Image (tube, rainbow, N blue to C red; front, side, top):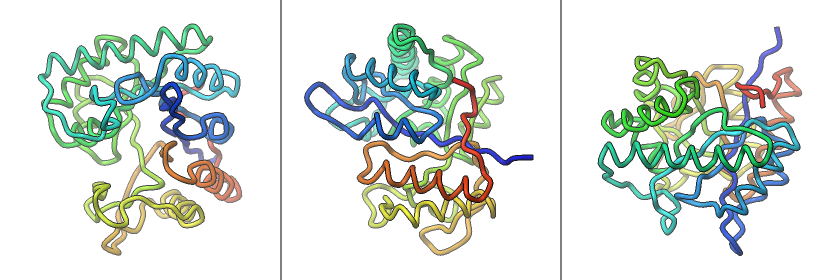
Amino acid sequence: MVRTIDLNSDLGESFGAWAMGDDAAILNIVSSANVACGFHAGSPAALLATLRAAKERGVTIGAHVAYPDLVGFGRRNMDVASDELTADVIYQIGALQGLAQAAGTEVRYVKPHGALYNTIAHEQRQALAVIDAILAINPRLPLVGLAGSGVLALAQEKGLPTIAEAFADRAYHADGTLVSRRAAGAVLHDAKQVAQRMLQLMTEGGITSIEGQFTPLKADSICVHGDSPGAVEMASQIRHLLEAQGIAIRAFIDA
């Protein structure tokens, strides 16, 4: 039986005259695209262009929902009331659904971005607010979250399907949490090193943490951040190395 893994990237983050990442190039490599919804990044015209490009390449679309934080790129923690956060997530999914429909595709899953992603991994109140939003839109939309985090178990208890995710270009602590972006060595840039780490994930069931310890991780999807320098090369190296080892890159949900 052929082993498979999804390869995703955060895309649609350009805003007007400000370009972020190379969506056209990375869409030729990944199987799923987490497309911004306008709260942390992404102008409507840029989002529509990314969605059309994804449709042309048969890439599955997910809503990359975030805190309302354009200035901070969604990477600043926010203490948002539960009902407000639920409404914010519903609003973002709905906006992307409309653009996706116009592009001839559809939103097939939801992945929170940045600070929201990290917060709901361990904070139950905000996690429940996000889960409630997805359930209100479509209880069949999977939630993508950090492998091993509490939000995935919480979502499953609520009947929401989940996808466990590992990050190719981020360092991990031995307890399976991500190293803060403010810490040295948190973001990885060597494409060959990144690819080898993901091969380790697939063949050994985990990766080496920043402390030098083997850290078990069970993931359904691998993420390369689209705004990272060298993102296209990293995604390409991962795909080529895994495929060379007989591991197919395939979306966890068909486009």
